[in-house]
Image 1 (cartoon, rainbow, N blue to C red):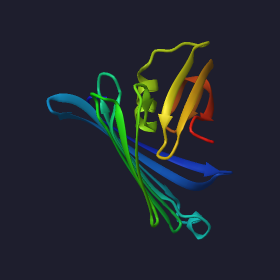
Image 2: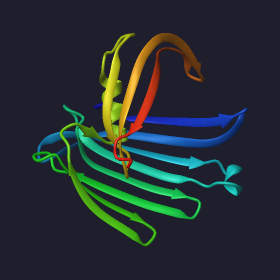
Image 3: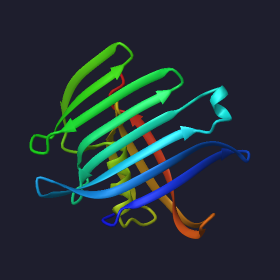
Image 4: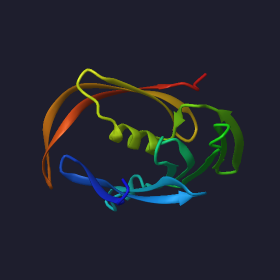
Length: 182
């Protein structure tokens, strides 16, 4: 990911555009240590906004070698609802300091975890692995409010055709379990 990346995605339902996403990746250095910064912006298409409007931004900064999170920011703008979540992770203690604003409700809390990732660093870690059919990948992922066990079973390989051409891809079956639900 050193050279940076730019990706654009379009989602449609029955041929009708409903949303888009843009993702940008760049390498950066903090205290002489290499990190990756990824910013993803998602938005609903204007036709859908009469029913539901979304303008979300997720930013993640994570260590280039370990993919361990350093900072995670999630700005949710869905209709009139605004949620801002900012997380700073201390690399030495693995303490996650979370600040979450949802309307007038402000919540600050901490947790310690050696293995938790944010959604972006988890995706980039998965992209960096050389897995094979039959493998299972398990990750503890903090989504901004709760922690989840994300399990991905690699069940096959197949060709997928997109606008840019035909690609060889893995078929993965994901499962998500909320670890913090009461």
